[in-house]
Length: 184
Image (cartoon, rainbow, N blue to C red; front, top):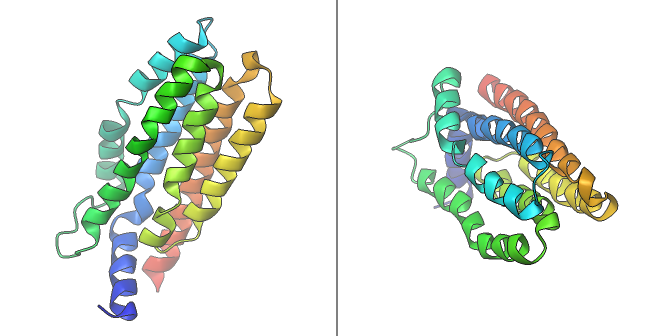
């Protein structure tokens, strides 16, 4: 496959799936729920368990947004389409680290989860042929690390708030990126 053909396939994915904004929007909502959880007067370990549970509705919420936004999850004629699923499953291999942090250092669970969330966005910059995923992956990873190292434990919910707001900003950038691509 030549480079031009590959770029055309990536552009096709980007336009038809609208840069995956149904997922970034869903993730932003989940992270706002995580803010609420992390503000509860529970032990960090217990809040970590609740965060795992809160992440469960991610796909159903993204599916609802896909219907509303008219995004395509399956683009059968595009051979690159299955790669998107594989890129997102890659983050599951970081979950043993997350479980380790949950058990040994639960007060840093939220920071670790946010770093994994941000980092897993990076390959989507190539997949959707947009710089926004790469930029926001860096912002989330470095921003949450800075907040996690700077904030006292009782203020760690700001890590989740930062992540949620950043995901909404990413969604806005991806939306406009998609509009530009559709007009070309």
